[in-house]
Length: 122
Image (tube, rainbow, N blue to C red; front, side, top):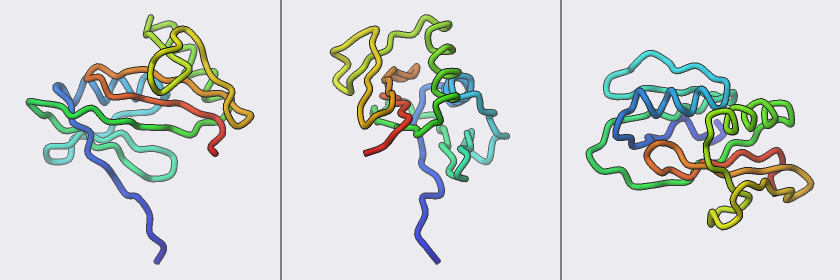
């Protein structure tokens, strides 16, 4: 059997709100709660399992998307009035990047996790 990432736990101060935030940006659905987790399933079967935490350690999550998915998600980012950046250090506000011949953008979720959308990976 090949090794695959199955899920990762994403700490959140409100698991339902954070899962809904990401699902809305990416055009996905939020799954039914499973125990303490609220899942968001990605196309490759990996789930981001949101879990309530009193303190959240901020992490980085990168999503490889198609050009059309980037356009739709980026429109939702702008329509929501979210700050977005071209770089992982959040020093280039209001811009996207064109690394590796694609497009990319960074933004924060409600708990300060760094979210990245990219159309091409290195």
